[in-house]
Amino acid sequence: MTAGLRARVGLAPLTVVGLAMLGAPRAIAHDLGPVAAVLNGLLVFVPLAV
Image 1 (cartoon, rainbow, N blue to C red):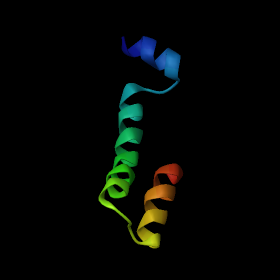
Image 2 (spheres, one colour):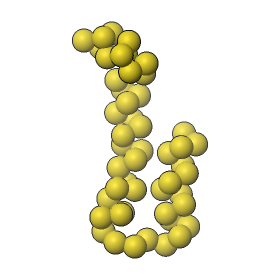
Image 3 (cartoon, rainbow, N blue to C red):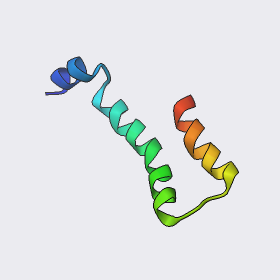
Image 4 (cartoon, rainbow, N blue to C red):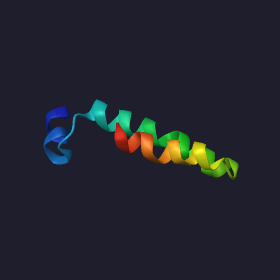
């Protein structure tokens, strides 16, 4: 199953999970309400940089 997923997505399943975990704090912060501009910038651009 892992080889099939890797072939379809092009990434290892652990990598996909890790990237999802990087994006989770931004979704949670968005649900909690407005956050400071600096924190929002970090939550947007740090996962992209990783």
